[in-house]
Length: 329
Ligand code: GLU
Image (cartoon, rainbow, N blue to C red; front, side, top):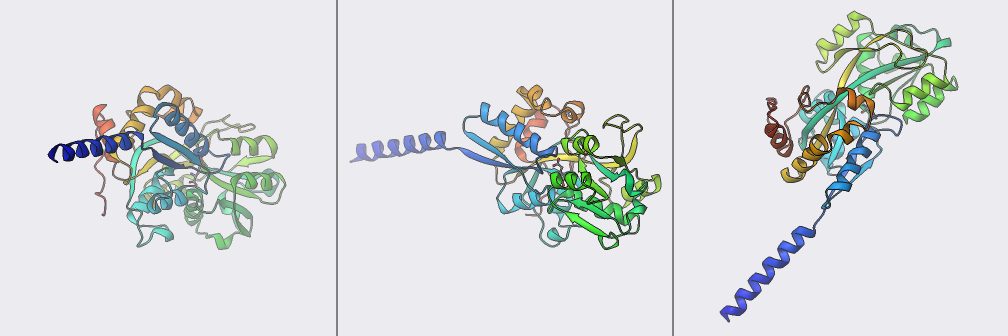
């Protein structure tokens, strides 16, 4: 009888161990529009994970952007995501963005900041726009539904004492469509917050007669004071066709986040892969990553507490862990 119990217990242990070994972790990585920077970045990360970690399956999904993604981490629809660091902060702390007021996305955890995301403001050459102050009464694309870009557009208009209601029309939707509308003369201008060199802006500059609209120094100061995640940023001359001089604007940081529900082991192994043994492959996803990402600076601008798996990785690399507010839960 005793022997039988021992055998049963052994069998159960073996079965459990086998089950655990075979179990897979599924990670949906939230990104942005197909012509932005998030989507290729998330696809690249998923590819690296899938070809190296057999027990983790990752897939990248195209979404509206940062606001949607941070919400989807909270609901459990995404396990990892790309988001702007300003939006991650507002979502985690339940501030500034209507959707998160009183409903913080407290499951958000930081993994790393990756590259500057620059607020690109473009106008059709024949729309007679040289400053955002000329946007009154114009048809302007302000971002996709659920984008971080839309929040940036709103805040920039605020710096010019305007709201979306002051525009002739605030147009929302897929960024690819917005570029088409600009090309066809059906909108006058557009806002898009994303890495320099992304295909949406390349397409706009190659297929439409456009100008880049700079932000005046006083407006940049206003934005930095009121919304401290903004940094001054100058889009170098020649980044796009016909862009003869540098364009003064602001930037936030593209940030990889994970759900607190993912285990420390999984996030550690992902971090150790993409920022460790496969770092060269990770950096080759996009020039903006190659030019800006380093393990040493990967916690600069981190607005939310680190995921324990990411904290373990950066501690091992000797990177000081930023002291950010404790999770609310
Ligand atoms: N930063 C943008 C947003 O969340 C998305 C940029 C991208 O897709 O690369 O609105």
